Length: 428
Picture 1: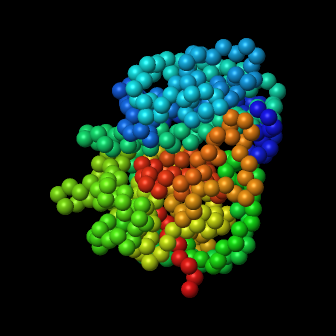
Picture 2: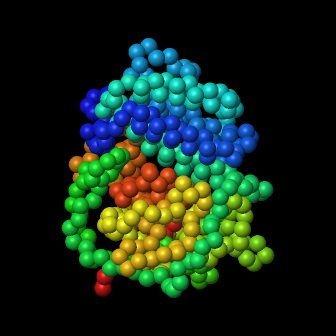
Picture 3: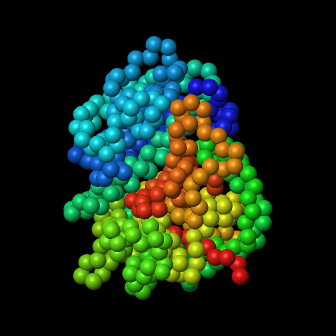
């Protein structure tokens, strides 16, 4: 590949080769740990076209290291299997023709045992490669590969939840909200002066879509001091929110009519009471927990009903720049957002972790954006169309993976991710 990945992707912190090996081993082990509760029958299920079977995630993350590190770096490297280059390619047309995404669940072969053997084969070669002297370009790609695998750790959980959540048995994976005392009182707002601010990555690892750092102007704004709760959202439903077209974008109104949505994904009304499927099973809905698994259209409509709006991604980042990265991440093994239990007068609560927060910003390039050189340029840039930005991470995100400049993106109709709502207002 022409140029250096590190030049546009990240500033590589000097580190010992043993530390790089440890990071590699830890991330790869975490993926397997997330699979530990699964039965062999779970690994091949693809519950919808936009999701992937756990077996595919295990293989694709391995394919990434084999394709972008081992093949270019080791003369005469022998791939584990010649056809895996196509079977486990996600969307990199520069590598070859990917196997159709919607058909991933049809691949009963390779078996799980063969996929695990594939992972072990690549891990052996990767650790041997990392045993050589540090190399800036190589280590930049390793860092990208590890962050890529952390993204797939989250996707593994969200895709698995879609499978389990649509199974009449409502299988239990694990986790569950901890018992905590929610913050008393109604939600409030913190005021921000606006003006010129620098946004975007400012050092350390970042994806190319977080660059370049650049100035933006924001008018004064208010940002909610906590996430929207299930109780808040139940009030929207009770007031006929899903039947009142005035709150919805035209595309969102069409979506809820076609799909007959009347509540967030995984909500079930049983004997007149709301229940919610979580990865620890089906439970009565807890009013104090953040609402989760709502689409961007539902977030927009709720904000309009509330007399508020969604924040822009820059307003959110302005608030997050000075806030500690604390919250419910996958590290907690809760696998569900927690109640807001602490607030301060300086920073909004629940900015990080718990749920990805929909913003009012379309996903597009920053001024001066340049994709990564070569085939890796397909990582983010070609998806900058028709999607919305989400910020903050979720209870399925590794804490070490998130930062204030991180830009997630999904179509506004998507809601199988751990997505929720924070409100904003203009200053009168």
